Amino acid sequence: MKKLLITAAAAMLLGGLGVAVQAGPQEDLKEYRAFFTKKFPNVKMADFADGAYAIDEQLRANWLQIEEFPPYEPYIAEGEELFNKPFKNGKTYASCFPNKGIGIADRYPHWDKKKGQVVTLESAIQDCRKANGEEPLKGSSGPIASIEAYMAFTSRGKKTNVVVPMDDPKALEAYNKGKEFYFTRRGQLNFSCAHCHFGNSGMLLRTERLSPALGQTTHFPKYRSKWGAMGTLNRRFKGCNRQVRASPFKDQSEEYRNLEFFLTHMSNGIPLNGPGARK
Amino acid sequence: MRRVTRSLLLAVPPALLAGALFAAAPTALAADEAEVKKEGKEIAFNRRKGNCLACHAIDDGESPGTIGPPLFSMQQRFKSQADLRAQIWDATKRNPETTMPPFGRHGILSESDLDKVAAYIWSL
Image (tube, rainbow over all chains, first blue to last red; front, side):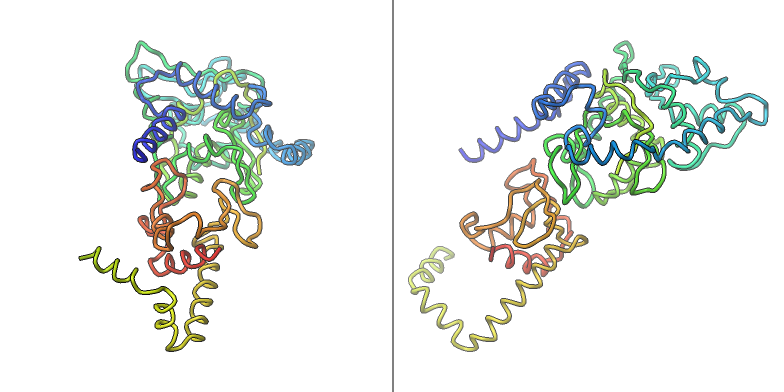
């Protein structure tokens, strides 16, 4: 009987967390939204873009004060300069993107049928450099983060809109791989992403308020006080992996691109507000 | 055989058993026990070791998290210290979905550190 109860509880939890892989992206979206709106009934859907600052008044007050003189501003300026600086061949980043790269962050990440993979804003910037005979930018901070910060800034207010095309089974496969990554325990500490950002979101980890998964991608890249610098979503992924004592993956690895695909899709409809400032 | 041993042990009045154990050097043993608990507390509170405060409110520990239940009245919540130790060693056995890291199974703490932590937590 006891065993039965435990199994039932586990099944409920799994169901609640949407681990059932057969459910499609649309069903997932409905389920995750329902989960978080029930958990945080006073938070409007769009406000989930503010992460922990949407659910903790004191933190919000501190954050609003930081936003008076945003620490990410110099990086936007640097990013704009880098974005407009011609490559050796005379072209600029604008030549690689629709609308010359302005206000288009909502188109990423997206499924590229021809490439058969997820393209993120970060990987598109690198592809642009490659196409123009430039070396890739290194890491997940520095110039790459600044360029992204500028591009994100021009896209503020647009809504997250990740499409998983149903006419290409490989796209759904990539989404499901990202989802599996999200719900898989890893590292010596044995946490999945979901352990902190679903059921335990809103709880305190020592003094840290755990942010809900919903809306978590909207403010990237971000200036993080802990880093004292700007970083991309991949920088945060690597940090999370290290925190649970797992080996991080490489920047723009298939694992992280698929994870970004899944995680960003979850926030569909929530406005982009990057670059952001976080503790 | 195991059952026989247990019933034999049960037949001995606990006071007598304790008396026999402590008769040799009662103060030394009590001092040892206090030392073990003290070390257990240090390991439990250390961020690089147990880091139990990350999730649990414990005793006089500062800035505890709220992810796990506060730790008190442990002797009412667990059958024995061994049972509590087993929970710390691998909490996924009882609840596969638990957030709690498997401190023994994943070698986060050494077996002897686990003994000390279990002794401390059991005393709460």
